[in-house]
Length: 225
Ligand code: CTP
Ligand code: CA
Image: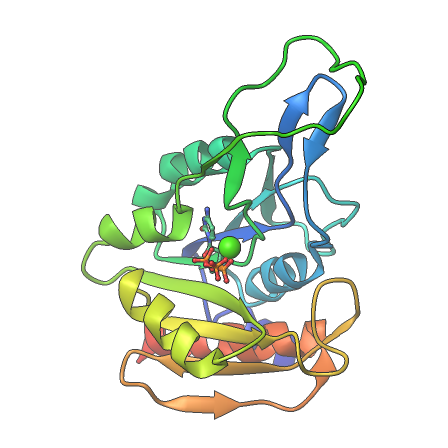
């Protein structure tokens, strides 16, 4: 009975979730990536689905598998592909939770052939990627809810609040790399949620599934009032 009640919390709301890293190609066999496991985003997508939401999960390369059935998975590789996939879905969703670790820079030119090693070092020129979250924040319609993450090592709350405001978010999930047990690879996380009114809620160290529960409850509160 508790489960069927839970299913009603976000019944039929379309929600977008991003997860995982992005890979930015250098040449046909090499890329620039990061250590994101995708666990947090997949846990959020599972939690939303168990609350009855109609979830689209746009994910970079990851070994994760969804536990819930009603999740549409869209696989992408690069930041540019993730942007395109997000823009296609965004107009149709009630809420978006952007937990992907999107590359900030991508090679200016992708070599069409494998780069051969030569004497001396190698310099790869990079250009900035488009900030997906900021782009969605600029396109946000009345009633849409947009959630971002911030990964910080210093001046954490100040940096998170700057991101919240610059990207027009409803709340931001601050992930501190200074906290033991928090971060990319592990199964636990420790977060602080900061909303538009600058209300701050700090949670204890928990499993990523439990952290996903806290984040999704906040989303449900904003949707249901
Ligand atoms: N993000 C995004 N597109 C990018 C870079 C980041 O959508 N090209 C999103 C992430 O998914 C996350 C949020 O922006 O929800 C914050 O990411 P983070 O790396 O902490 O912040 P940046 O704005 O990229 O700033 P910096 O890395 O310099 O701290
Ligand atoms: Ca970044």
